[in-house]
Image (cartoon, rainbow, N blue to C red; front, side):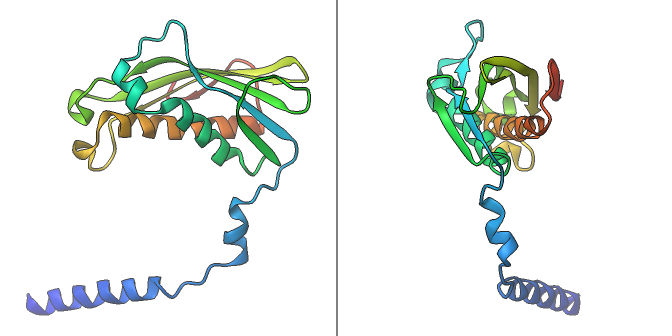
Length: 181
């Protein structure tokens, strides 16, 4: 039994040592550099007028800024410029508006059940609506959920929604349904 433990320790140690020697290639460094064209203006994300959202979630989770930030980071390779919290529509770029229409985020983290975020969005080009979507993501918190709070779990939802939207932006369609819907 002692020999097996020694062998396992040696394997873990050698794996850790070899990870530090990897060199970053030029391709990996340029992965965060925009290669797209045009401009995407993301209007300030809002809670829909009929959305029922606990005040604690509004105050503590920062979901509105997180969602636009995730869209920006995942769509970075599709646009030369992405401007968050755009206040005016412009013919100089694509305008994306997003609103959170429903949110289930009971307090108590994973112990109070799964959390979900439902959003709607519109893409306007040259002043005309060209595409729209409805999306929902549900999460129970993933690994170690018992140690995560409500904001962390809702953050997982909006992160995945940001990725969903970026994928949709590659080929936007009308009345698209994204995520867990």
